[in-house]
Length: 201
Length: 208
Image (cartoon, rainbow over all chains, first blue to last red; front, side, top):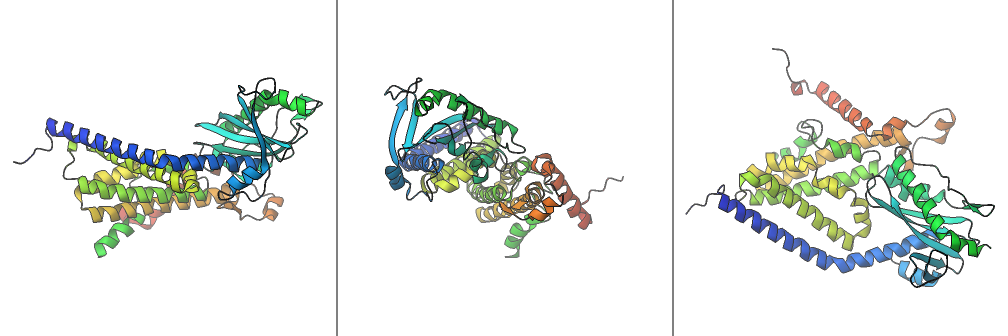
């Protein structure tokens, strides 16, 4: 019997089988790959924290070891800048002096994130590190480059004890992403301000 | 043998997907501000076009023609997601480079165009070669456009400074327009112009 590949019955059957097969395949792939991906993401986080703090020669192979070596404490802060188990603001201390804080914000197409490393006096940036999910490569995507990130080194976050907005060179053709970075830094610093106040009484 | 060669070489010139079929223009203007993303995008699209052409060609006799576009889209999307998941697990650095392109690859008109125009009516091996050829033809244009945009827009190539500092001191300035998407269309237009001037048989005859 010759089957009619344009009959409604066949189309429904074909579509159903195709979707079930594809769904099963993708589910299996995601379940199988997930542990590996989680390990990579965790490693990536450590690399970013260490790089922001200015630890030299961090790569994906030595990140776990270096992180254990350099990260002397990590805890959560509440909105008053005190260490508190129920706090919502994570903080990593590198080599007992540099505080590294995570940042989250919005770029043009999707979320952007980063880490800011603040010196022991609580008033100067020692390093910054940015990442993004879907900014345009060559434009907004440039926030991940050394050239963009290194300009934050040594920038003051306070003047006469007052928090000041960070100024930096934006990226040509990526105004929205640059504005997103600025908003993210200023907002995050405001949230952590009480803690840095305590570092520098 | 010469036919297989033709399938690879022709899309680089006379049947180029970007300059002759005018497909894939959207991603062409998105990723050509610099050379490196253009290379990554070109390689990704070449791999996906070749593989999806191959798979669709294998399935071509059983696909009901009324839902063929949906079937093609499902196959392409599955393929891209599988590759992306695999890279995320075992080549994290590459996957970070690629993450932005995944959506762009799935919706690239060249892939759908080749599936429709070629894979549905040809054998798997020929379709594979056709996909490879068209992917390379697309990459070629991407690389040419990105070369000029990065050189004149940022003064760099692959991130290395090529225009010497002394030029800037003498008053030379990077062209900001090069960084913006419209410049990609203008450069593609110029490439089409040059190509048609050199190959008069490609010009349509508009006189009645």
